[in-house]
Length: 102
Length: 259
Image 1 (tube, chains in turn yellow, purple):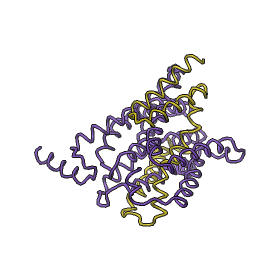
Image 2: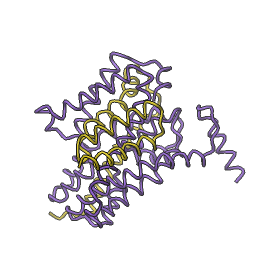
Image 3: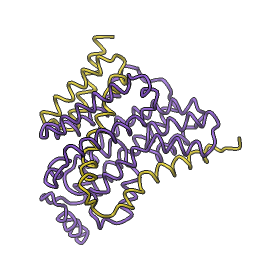
Image 4: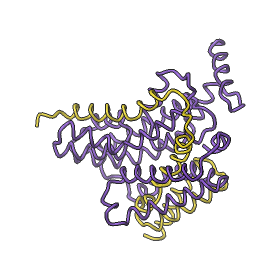
C-alpha cells in the first residue's frame, strides 16, 4: 500500500534495462553452433512478421484499411522502396481508404 | 578536429561495408532512418499517454517512464498494475514477461557487434533495443555502427517520451482518422525490414508467410488467444525460427547476404 509511483517506475526501468543489456554485454564471442546461429538469423523475420499480422488489421478503424496498407507496404518493399516511402504510403493508404469507407 | 576526423575514418574502415563513411555521416543516416520511427512513436506513445493518465500518472512521470522503458506493451501493462496498486514484484514480473522478446533481440544483436566493441557502446545501444530500432539495426549490412544507432535514438527517444507526456496532457484531442492512419507507420517499417530479404531468399519468404499465418491462427484459436500478445510473439518466434534453423541451417555466406 505504501508504494510510490517513482518506486514503480524505477523497478520497471531496471527490469527493462537488464533484459536488453545482459545478452549484449555477456555474449562477447561469435556463437559457433550452427543451429544457434541459424536460429538467431531467422528470429528477426519470425518476430517482426508475427507482430505485423494480424495486428495491422486491428490498429486501424476498419480492418480493410489495414489490409490495404499491408498489401501496399509489401508491394513497395518488394520493389525496393525506401523506409520512409513504405511507412508513409501505409499511412496514406489508411487515411484515404477510411475517408472513402467511413 | 583533424584528429577526430582521422579517427572517424579509421573506425569506418574497419566497417566491412567497403564504403567509407565518417561518424557524422553515419549519425545523420541514423537520424534520417529514425525519423519515421520517431513519428510513429509520437502517435503510439500519445495513445499510451491517454492510458497512463487514467492510471493517475503525471506528464513528468509519463515522460520518465517512457524515456527509461521504451516499451509499449511493457509500459501499458505496468501502468495497469500501478493503477491496481500492485506490489513491486508483480510490476517487475509483468515488465519481464511483456519485454522478454527484447532478450531475444539482444542475443541477435550481440552477434552483430564487433567482439571488441566497448562496454559503454553495448550499454547505450542495449538501452534502446525496441522492435523498430532492432529492425533498422538488423537491416543495415555489416557490424553495428554505434553512431547509426545513436542517430536513430536521438530522434526516437524524444519522440516516444514526449509523445507519452503529450498524451497525458492532451488526452483525446487528435481526430481518430489521423491516429488510425499514423498507427500503421510502424508496421510499414517492419515490412520494409522483412520483405526485401524474403524476395531474395525463398526460405525467408516461406518463414514470413508461415509466421503471418501462424500469428493469425494464434489470435483466433481458443486457448492460445487468451495468452498476452507479448507471450504469443515469443512462443511463435521460438517455434518458427527454431523449426527454420533445424530444417534449413544457414551457412556463413547466406548470413551476410540476408540480415
